[in-house]
Length: 471
Image (cartoon, rainbow, N blue to C red; front, top):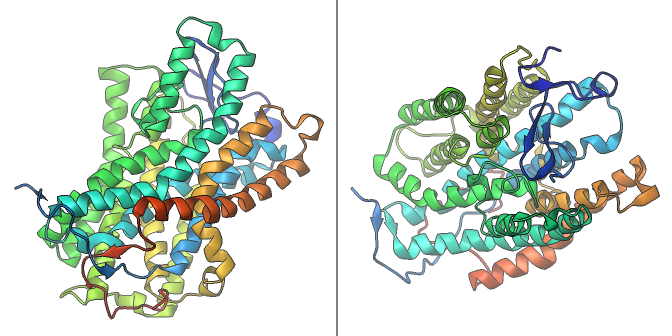
C-alpha cells in the first residue's frame, strides 16, 4: 500500500495484517517519538523519552422524578465500550487476518457512539430542566450530577494508571533530565482536571490514561449542554427543520475538519503529531457528534409528548424498528470494512480519518432511536438483567481497561505474557468494571449528589412509556 509523504509502513505489516500507515515524528525530550497505525495511536501505552442564562432561582430543587431508563440503550453501551477494549488489545492477540484486524480497528468508533448517545440521553433526561432557560440553580445542579456521574471513576482510572507510567519513566531515567519531571507532573495535573484534550501534544493528551481524553471532551459537552438545550426549546423547530439542521450539523462537522486540516497544514503549519492529536481528540471538532445526539433526543422527546408535527412514525412498528437496526448495523459494517484512502497525501489521509466520525453519525442515531422507541429483535438480549448490568458498568470498563493494558505492556507478567493470559486479563477487566461500578461508582455518585436518585423539575414525559422503557 503506498503511504503518504512522511509516513512509513510499520515493520511486519505484510505478515501480521496490520496494513496501514505509520507516522513517526521525534518529540523533543521523549525517546522514540510516537507511532500511529491505521490512523490510530498505538494499542500499547505510548512510551516517550438574548441571554439564555437567568441567574436566579439558586437553590431550587426540582421534585419530579427523572424519565425512566431505557434498558436496551443501557446495554448497547457495553458493546461500544467492549469494542474500544478490543481495539486497544489488538496487538495482544498475535497476527490476525487483515479483515479481522479491520473489524477490531473499527472499535475506535465506539467513542462516536458514546458522544451521540450522550447528547441523546442528556436531552431525554434533562430537557425539562432548561425548557424555560438556564437558571443558576438548575445549571449547577446539572453540573454536580454529571460530575458525580463520571469523575470518581475517572480519577480511579488515572490513579490506577499512574504507578505503571511513573515506574516506566523512572526506570528509563526520564525524570533525571532537566524539566522533564515538572512537565510530567503538569501533565498529570492537567489530566486530573480533565483538560488534556485541549493540549494537542504528548505527554498531555496521549499519556497516563489515554482513553480518558473523551471524558475531557464530555466535560466540555456538559458545560454547554444547558445552553444548547435551552436554545432548542426556545427555537422550537418543527420536525423537518430539526432534521435539516441535524444534516447540516453532521455535514458541517466534516467541513470543519477540512478547514482545520488546511489551517494546520498551510496557514499555521504544525508538526504531524500535533495535527493528528488535534484532529482526533479536539472537543470542538467532536462536538458535532454530541450535538446530533441532542437533536435526535429533542425529536424523540417531542414525539413522546405528542407535540404537533412530531411522532415516532414508522418506528411505532416493531417490524420497521427491526429493519432500522439491520440497516444501521449494515451501514456501520460497510464503513468499517470499506477501503481507506491510500494515496500520497497526508492531508487527504487525515481528512479520511476525520470524516469517518461524521459518517457514523446517521447509522448510530438510527440504532439509538430504533432501540429507544420500543421492543426489537434485540430486546430479549438487551433487556436481560446481566446485560443491563454490563451496560451500566461500561463507563468503568472504558476507563479502567487502560490500566490493565499498561500492566501487561510494561512486562509485569514476565513469562506469562502470552495470548491466553491476555484473553484472561481482558475478561478480568470486564469483571473488575462491574465491581468498580457497584462498589465505587454508585456509592460515590450518591454521596456526591447527596441523594439516592435523580429528579427532574417537571412531568413532561409522564404517561409516555414505550415498550423499551420500564414504566
